Each structure stands twice: as structure tokens, then as C-alpha cells.
Image (cartoon, rainbow, N blue to C red; front, top):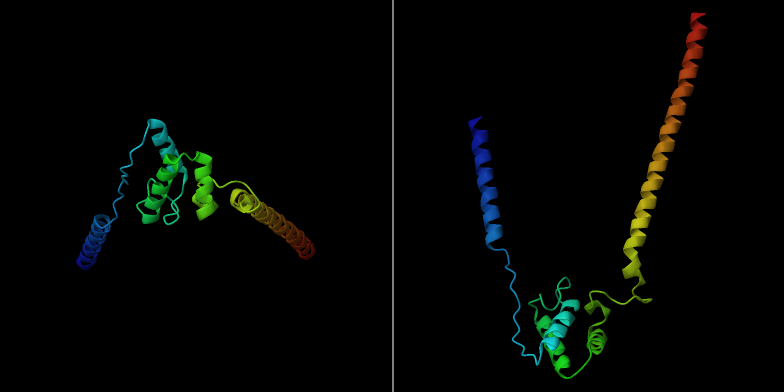
Length: 166
């Protein structure tokens, strides 16, 4: 009995140490700071809006503002340069798409290449619903068949009982 308590205490100690170690070495998110000087607040706002809708090609789940990757810093520099050269937001987005593909956009345009991306999740959900419906319908039919079999067995049993008792 005492041996089990000692084992449980050691296990609890190991789990606690594992958790402390895991959290002490967890990467800390750092805010990216760019020291860009803008001519006016409109350019700063456009820069922030554009950088928020461009995905980091390396990180894939962060926009270029939130990413610390070197390529994200390059993209931020490109956006800043293009804004200062007088490009429109649409021209800047077109430049980025031409260079990195539609993947660089968080909301890629709807075209023949991205139909699966836009409608794939809905198609999978519909397919899953159809499979669940078919499984439930099959289970209901199997239950009805089992009920029918038991009723047939009951009738046969009643006939046999009536035959032997009479």
C-alpha cells in the first residue's frame, strides 16, 4: 500500500517537472517592430491594412505584420516601398500575387483554381451529413429487420408451444 503511494508521488512529481520544463521553454511571441516613416497617416493606414491581408509564405498562419520570419520582413519592406512609389492597393496586391501566388492572400479570389478551396469544406460537410444519414437509416432498417425476425421467432415458438400443450 505504501509502495503505491510512493509511486503515485513520484509520478506526480515527474508530471509537475515536465509541465514546468515545457512552459519554461515555450517560445514567446514577439511583436514585430518596423521603423517605417510615413509621409502621412493615410499611407500608414494603407500599409497596415495591406500588411494585415497578406499571409506570410513561411509561417502560413500569420499575416506579415505578426510574423518574425525574414520573408515577412521583406514583404513588409516591399509594401512600404510600393506605397511610397505611388502604387494603389490593388496594384500592390497584384504584385504580391504575381510573385507569390494566391496563397499570399488570406482571402484568395474565387476562380477555377480556387473553387475547391472555397467550396471544399462545404462539400465535405455535405458528404459527412450524407454518410451519417445513410448510417442512421441503415441502423434503423437493421433494427426493424431484427424486430421482424424476433416476431417471426415468437410466432414459431407460440405454434410449437400450442402444438405440444394441446
